[in-house]
Image (cartoon, rainbow, N blue to C red; front, side, top):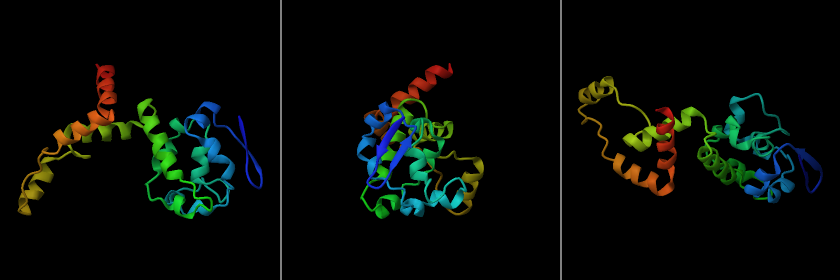
Length: 173
């Protein structure tokens, strides 16, 4: 348990010290005043779990396991939290780092992993059904191809995403 001493208060969080150090939360937490400015986050519009003092942002940064916190993946990268923070903190950038670590450690939700696998292997985030082909033909559009798959695969190899997909394939066998 970490005690983050803020400018006007002291907050006790459950985030393990190793996570606090890994993501430099010791530079973030003391400034979070729970001012509720980040309640502008679109995630709060769809959940009654968050209050002005227990925001979506605070849910993630004070979690016992931020990498395994499924709420992390609700962030839509709108940057509103960053725009309204009176200290100029960037919860969004922090969330992107935590998401990357979550994926690398195999803690991301299966839907996220499946989506990444689909994008890397087909170049698309969704499957193409025969109905899609028929609708495209009816509209005079050419069939969808996987032309971008090679480029996406190359990018995923550079970023290391392919390594995690190959590990998953080996585990499935």
